[in-house]
Length: 102
Image 1 (cartoon, rainbow, N blue to C red):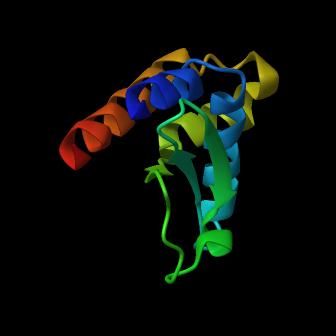
Image 2: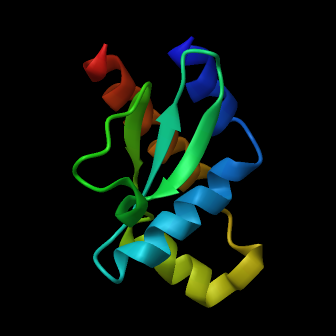
């Protein structure tokens, strides 16, 4: 079930790292996406790995990037920066995209 895969991703250990990777890749004009599968699994992909001919057996959602305020907090506070609000906003944005794709 796609919803199960989505929940496992946004509530799991890989989510924060994937958002940071997407943000870092965004500086170079790229990003990261998550591919959600009907069996409840997911995988995180660099957008350049997907290509324009890739046909997914599941659903691919782009992983948003941190906004400039969050990046500034990361620069100022490093690992002490509180990212919970930014991550909750990104979860909500991704949830809306998931609902739009249904």
